[in-house]
Amino acid sequence: MRTPDYIEQAWANLWKKKLRTFLTTCGVVIGIGALVTMFAFGQGVQRNIKKQFEELELFNYITASVSTRRHPGQAEFDPDGVPMDHRPADANERAEPLDAQALREIMRIPGVEAAFPEMKFPAQVQLGDDEQFTLVQVLSADAANSGLIALRAGEPYATDEPNEVIISDMMLRRLDLREPESAIGKQLDIRTLVLDLSLGNLMRIAFLRGGQSLPISNRTYSFTIVGVAERMGMSGPLPIRSDVMIPPGPAEGMKKLELTSIWDFFQPSDKPGTYSTVSVKVASPSDIPAVEQKLHERGLRTFALIDQMDQMQTAFIIMDVFLLAVGMIGITVASLGIVNTMVMSILERYREIGIMKAVGATNGDVQRIFFYESGMIGLLGGVFGLLLARVVSFVINQVINGVASGQGVPFIHYFDFSWWLCLAAILFSILVSLLAGVYPTLRAARVDPVVALRHD
Picture (tube, rainbow, N blue to C red):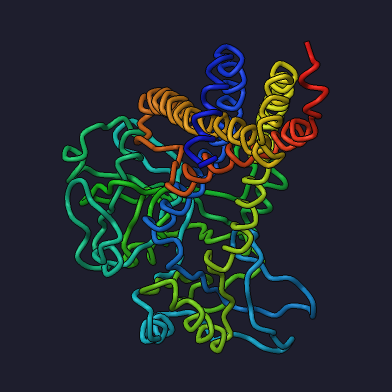
């Protein structure tokens, strides 16, 4: 028999028992649909995370900080508590100070596009009668004009000296101002925290025990809003992670509690004009190893997100395996349905198999007929299962985005149906069906034609 003959015979046999074939195929459809939907969701999550990192150029940044003395074997961490890559440091070794001269030298390293000091301090900002607490970032005019900040209204300050401020539209909404253009030229008050550890203040706290319970006071400074940024805060570009930015000139004259990180409490700078942390932007992620080596030679600790890609890939693999394991439950149930269908088909066609063998059909011919039947069930289940997965994912995607749009969240595709996933789903469905048909086909091939012809 030729291949078309096998296909025709298999289809005719399945068509005779339409209801049973339909129900068995539905089991495969549901199993493949569930498996593909979950796997597509996992792929969508990975794609969205990587896309967000690439859009924000997170893989293009290195965080460099001063390497201070440490005990042998002591772990080093970045300001957020994440272990940092570092070169072996001698106990008596100190890094060169991070100051304006160091920034200029870092800028001359091949592959470096920009270097920005991380200078932030907590403050209360007030616009009219509304006020909000935030971290104010000191940002040079060069950085403000470098293109990292996308402005919705106004323009960045031109020099490092004026009492001017750039504020994000998110902070403006929190301050009950909806139109960015109307904020330009308005006065923004910044109230800083000052840690007063003078002997007189400490004695007043210790003995008077009234009014002031902490050695902290406030100072208020006025700034003029010159620009409104589109997206700042934790969703903004590195190294800018604040909703309020001021130039270095007025920042130097402000009394404030500088808080780049918690380590600043334990490792205070002993020189004015120095920084504890600097963000370095490179032209391409491929430049990071060479730039990190140069920074290590200066005695600096470094942390780059791209160095953590191995851990991220491991996490993605674990997630995919978990989703695959859950989806395999449905596939297992569907394969049992195929076995049941094929075994029932053999029992019903016992005499027919005997006749086929009596007229010259070999065991291989009988096996191939049943293999084609089970494979055809797998093909139909894979195709319609893939369609089911696309429909279900489309509905879920629309519902989630419909709810999220009310919160101002942009539209996101949470599922990723790549071509290889679609092809793999169909091939996997056929493979599972063929494996499920192994036992029934072997059983059909062992049918004794003499006994089968006597079968009522």
